[in-house]
Image (cartoon, rainbow, N blue to C red; front, top):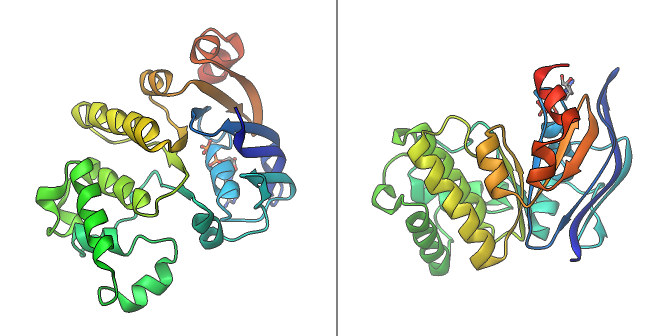
Length: 246
Ligand code: ADP
């Protein structure tokens, strides 16, 4: 399977702290890949590097064969590579619909003209995606009136508005109640199968990631500790030790 994302020997330091050291990973087009590791192991830093939130010190990041490590967030989003955040970033006083409409890659421009110039298709797309995540009945409510879990579903729908080719999801199930978790996992599987969307997912809920991902990378202390299928990762003593703090 051809890789849509190729990370090669990426190193990122903050002052004296090496957050990522020589990390290489590859995600095939249409795959769901997991990224796990204890707190502080470097997962978020790697996400930030991939989507252009900060420059990397060394290495290469290729998306669809093109080097993107020098590009900025907006430019990378326009190529079809988008991330979500552990904490939601919805505009709480705006309606769900409005959040959807301004969630384009060129968000800054959209903020300037807000509602005025959205084409009809954007409304239809927004309504369709709100329906997909089960929030259509709440489309006119301020996003701040949604529960935390619903806000995460909204954010997921907002990320889909960009019609990305690949989504980086940062702990999609954190803080969500078990009923919504199952619904979210179903939807992730559906966007993967129906739309062919490639997913790279940071997830602490082992049951979720083992069911979702077909391949998993595990970081520890900023380095790649192990990689393999869920079964291989589950039985890997290094992974178990890393989580137990050994
Ligand atoms: P994880 O997402 O796996 O919890 P992080 O990528 O957040 O790990 O953190 C990896 C390491 O990098 C930690 O030691 C963290 O303190 C450090 N780090 C991350 N971001 C910054 C930053 N902006 N400035 C300084 N240190 C940082």
